[in-house]
Structures are given as structure tokens and as C-alpha cells.
Image (cartoon, rainbow, N blue to C red; front, side):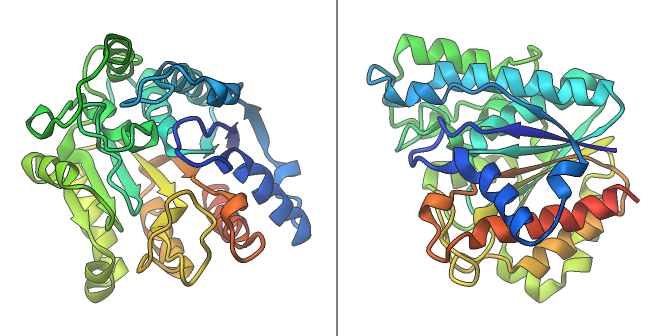
Length: 314
């Protein structure tokens, strides 16, 4: 049975509005006559969105102390859903909270090996030492992997940011929560050199959109599952900017063209969920304030959510 975790936090992003993404999805459901959100149990996670008014924050890791607290709350929510014997689907504002989701999985299953499918246009593997923006939604994977990437350092990091970055890296345990060989990118196409250098150094698998299309989704899914055969649990983190902004909408914080189409996203989900190893899914970065086509991004995200929920509930 599915339980939704509603995490309306956007403090890790550089643009406001992703905190409204969940409500936009609910409106999409209501407008389509779907009673989805009235039919599933849910947990609301308290947020720190008021921290956006804090002008005294680190420039290399903005509001990191509040992002850390948000990740801690999300991790506890995810772990609690597992204790209730349910399947967590996390609906988040910005993508920084994905660290909390990963930590929550490890909190519930400390001896299990985790595999991660990162459906995203962006690598999200910066650290405070390498980030050109200081936005923490670009850092969750570096924290999960416990990688500072000092070989590509461009920033001097203040002591407070160092303290909370260390707390993020050790959230719910001293060891890294993820092995790079168990991380797979799908749709990555907008990244900085520092990120690419680390991805190549760690040997992380990246399937580009053109490669997925030319190879075929079924074969790519099979390859992903084969690469993750030694894992016990798979978590799919779905940033809606993995989809083509020209074809769908610009309703996300950092849109990128030449992404996946919605039918391709559904095929990817179908194949991965069929393995029975997927135990958690997250949606992130739906921003209705930036949508150039009404509420199209939230409508599309809800279409995907409704589709995969029917498969999970079978």
C-alpha cells in the first residue's frame, strides 16, 4: 500500500515556487476528476520555508542548516512509512531533500544495499567546495556519497557551512549511504565540469537521452537492473526537468531542452517497477510559478504518479 510523503520545501533551490508543486499536482488531479489524493494515506512534513528570508547565510551552501533539518525530517518520515509496512512515494519541492529520502531508506534498512536511479537533467553532485551557485539542491548525491570533490575546488567554505555539510554527509549514519557503482543517471545533460570530472573519476553510469532512444528503453532498463543486481533496494528519484521542457513545459526551476517525453518516462518506470526491487520513488522540482503552459508540468507529473501508483498497488 502506498503512503505519500508531502514535503513542501524549496529552500535548497535558487528559484521560489517548487513548494507549490504538490498543491499544483492536487489541482491537476481535481481538475481531471481523479480522487487520487483522497484515496491515499499521507504524511505532511513540516518545512523551514520561512528561512528564505535569512540574509545571513553561507554563499557557498545557502540555508544549509535548514536544508539539513529538512532532510532529517524527511528521513524520519520515510523510515516511519516503512515501519507501517507501506510503500513511500515522496512528493518534494526542490531536490535537496532527496538526501533525506536516501537516509530514511538506510535508516529503515541499514544492512541492505541501496541502488539509485537518478532521472534528472542535472547531476546534483556538487559540494559547497565546487558549487558555482551555492544552491543545496545541487548537492544531495555528493552528500550521500560523502564526496567533497576537492580536486575541483573553487570555493572557500566557512566554518558553519563545513559543520552542516559534515552533518549532511553523516545523516543517519557515519558511512556513505550510497556506493557510486550503484548510482545510475538517466537523462543527464546539464552539468558543470567539476561534476563531470567526479562522475568520470567515480565511474558512475550515465545514460543520455539520445543513447536511451537509440538503444531502446527496454534494453536500457535491463542494463540498469543488471548493473544494480547486487543491490537489495532501488530508489528512483524523478526530477521533472528530466523531461523535455519544449515538449512539456518550463514549469520547473532549471528546465533543460532535449529531455525525455512523458511516454518514455512511463516506460522507464514500468520496466524498473516490474523488477520488484523498487521500494521508494520521489518526485521533485515541479514549479507552477514558472509554468508557461498553465499547469502543464504538474498535470504531466500527476499523470506519471497516477500511472505508477496503479502498478505498485497491483
